Length: 229
Image (tube, rainbow, N blue to C red; front, top):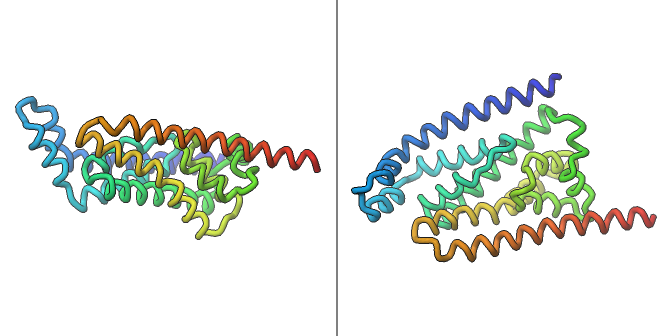
């Protein structure tokens, strides 16, 4: 019961932070939205204003991404695309990487300190898939790379395996790079056009599907060796 209350309090706090930071970000982009909705506004004026945002907007995007990443079940893709749209693929990707990395690190820290997840989480199929891999450290890294795997389950697996902090941080940073770059490139594509978007998405989805297949094959291989023993 205590764990459930702690989870509820943390999720509530996270949602409040998302609303506060999200509203401040809305104010930052209010003029952009008005230009977008105004049929008389020129495309050049809109694009110029979108790319005029500075450090404060980037900090808001990092904080919002981090909080959304730390709260289970809330996707960060829209914020990631906005980062790429506003700052281009390189800086946008850096913003996304920082936000996702900070969010996951914060979530693992809270899990480790407060122990608010139930033991039944250990039986989650994604947690088991990562922990039963021949190379669990690589499994953690791949878990962050695949959007369909809840980051909360990957965070739990990383904490449960008691990996060194340095390895956890490295796995998180490397793991969030593909999706962070993908969203930033998606934002850049929206800025310039849609020609390159299809190629990027198809290639990315292919890689992600390949990673999922790799996880399950690695898991089955390890289970097969254990049965032989």
